[in-house]
Image (cartoon, rainbow over all chains, first blue to last red; front, side, top):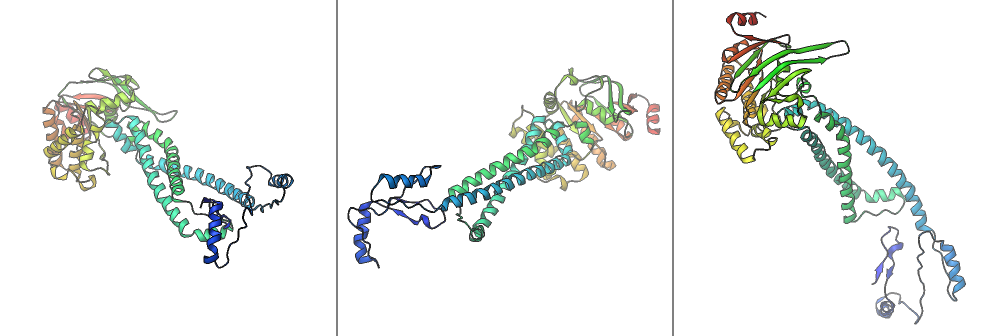
Length: 225
Length: 235
């Protein structure tokens, strides 16, 4: 077999591609092995699939084939993928907008949380400074702590999300009413890595202001609080 | 070693109110001294100690350690100075609760670039052993009594082998017997050449001092006679 179409989740992509010799050999053996023997007339090709470039007009291409060839009848495929693509595009933009809003809210929430945590630990940080820690050390300490928390949160969160999606993938596919493929392991690992990176970047941004404040605080005042 | 020259510190509370916890203080402390400053709460003792550690800058005047003007040093230089030359005993519980006693004691050495981990660990074990805390080296601060906590703080202040120890109420929260033990311990360390500046409200500590002062409304007055001690007690 020479190849098959990339999975789309539609069933159309079950087509197998093979050499003409292989097809002839299959037809020959089908006489004894298949319920309905396959008959391939010699020196003939039943169909040729033409893939147009993105943006090209498939109808114009079909017309041109009709004009330029004899004995060939172009059949335009229904605009199945185009419909899916436009539906998915709307859905994806919706998801994207929702994700951005949630991301901004999460970053703000984490900023408030880190500010509160840093305020509670002002005296502890002041003690560190008093025994010799530089402002830079305290700054890095706050950011590293935030990074570790982000890392742990991202790993646990993404793992739970992936598990739930995997468990309910059929339900999700059914409720979406459109093709849905669970990502391959490599794609999933890529998404996992991006998720962790985004979490670390987000938390670092959220912890930046508290880190600057706590590292630059007036020691004598912080120790009295 | 530690010198205050015409040092005044103001804090502006709001547009109309300014307080002056330290007013025109002059004090020279030599290497090996054991100086105690007594005074009631709110008389500027802790501010004076903070000035000595460079944790707050004077409004006017000059604070120097080994002739280095703390007012001219940036935050990083002050951090290096504190890690290499100063040990601090705080009034409040200052141990990090999430760290073991060993880690609390060795923590200041992380900031001292002249140190290495093995020496620090050996020194921490030795110090905690000397202070009677050998068995508590891997426990956490919440498992210690008040007296043990003070001794751990003392060990932490000594880990970088400082020349100067600044102590803020080192015997607060301690019973008389433990107070006496801690003060004797401080004097033993002082006998090895470490300079002490202690601020306290407890007049009972004065007999341990080589020189004693009374802080009253930001002014520093040396206690040189029994009469002055009596006056301080009566306040």
